[in-house]
Amino acid sequence: MIKFLDIQKITQRYSDEIHQAASRVIDSGWYLLGEESKRFEKNYAGFIGTDYCVSVANGLDALRIILKAYMELGIMKEGDEIIVPANTFIASILAITDNRLVPVLVEPDIRTYQLDDTKIEKAISPKTKGIMIVHLYGQCAYTGKIGEICKKYNLKLIEDNAQASGCKFNGTVTGSLGDAAGHSFYPGKNLGAFGDGGAITTNDKKLEETARALANYGSNEKYIFNYQGLNSRLDEIQAAILDVKLKYLNKDNLRRKEVARYYLTHINHPEVILPEVNNWDAHVFHLFVIRSPHRDNLLQYLNNNGIQALIHYPVPPHKQKAYKDWNNLHLPVTEKIHNEVLSLPISQVITDEEVTKITECINAYKN
Image (cartoon, rainbow, N blue to C red):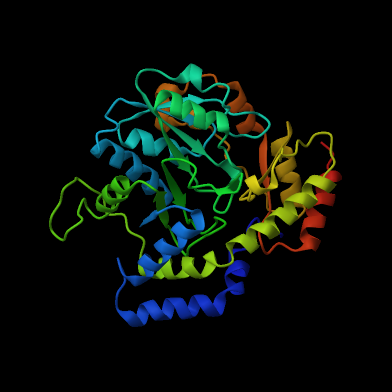
């Protein structure tokens, strides 16, 4: 079986450094809010290109805390609206509703799967306070038009950068394009921890201070609580491991791009729609997503031939029981995407032989 993602093989590449980093933390006797977290925050902020980085427990918390901080700062209030792509992973939307803000679902562009910037202005109301773009599958969702809309309507631009560490827009790294960004270090991400982990990046000092307090029970000073906060902190071992892997992220992303180029050049099947890539700097291929009207049959065929492909994601947010009030919404582009997408194996450790086998297998598929 060709694994969708061989995390063991990825880990083996940095094994000695990771063991040294973990041992250093274990021997230190300091496991939270220590020097490892400070070092990683500094290095990750430098990588992204922001003044500040606040490490947190996971990517969902990163987005939750950004919005909660804006509410504490009086920039947003309950009932305000946040525009968000309808085809995102549910975490983007959970972060909004958890703060009793209102998600406004906007359809994506069928070619790129990113938020369609031609449909945003129609969704803006007097209650709109922000746009959350999601760099889905590792591709940059930002456009100049989105930036102009945010300025025109005085909206906060929040990036869900959970899948796109190292992606760029005209030389600027995603996570530094908007007012604040949430990042995920879930083990399967391009920059993955050995468990959950996340971060907030921003150039806004007030937001950074508020977010840091909120992530620590609402406290900037021990036993003094200015906010009703959360317990959301990246532990020292995860920070040390991420700091090791961060050094290799750009190189790892380049390998993913090599694999993607091969797929795009060599997959040739009338019933397989390949992703559209207009700018190679603007994609780090967290996922390589194809579409097919016969997706389920193709998935079974690949599995039967020893290829572990996956679906990201089979059910769109507005059709989930968690948001049953939306179940009657009809969002045709989003629904088409979720009914047809299929993710092929891609990583920094997949071999050329495996990529060739996957390609040949798809080209030989008969429905």
